[in-house]
Length: 98
Image (cartoon, rainbow, N blue to C red; front, top):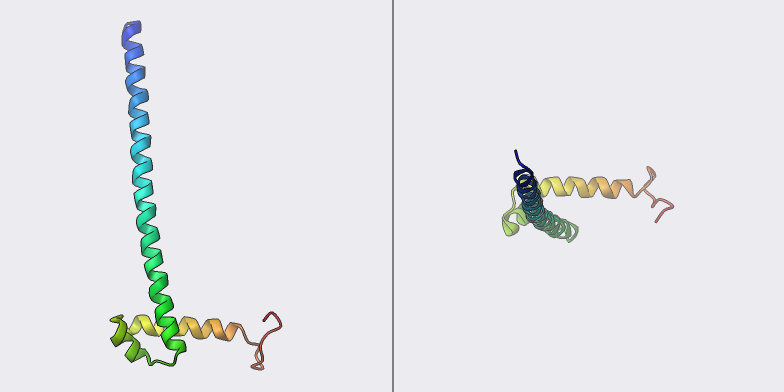
């Protein structure tokens, strides 16, 4: 291969690498954006159900009003109870870190 062909191959390779990197960045950004949207939606959904539970709504009513599966609501309720239990000592009094 001649010197000109080698230079042309190198230029083509470098351009291919640049285009591949640019495409990878764009795809990565799009995937990150989609993941952020999904995580934000899930956080909002969990907070809504949690707030309704704290307002003493029944899991069945919450499921019906939010159109979330009852199993999901019960899972949020369980997580909320575990979190609340962790904030209290075994004697039922608030822990010192509150």
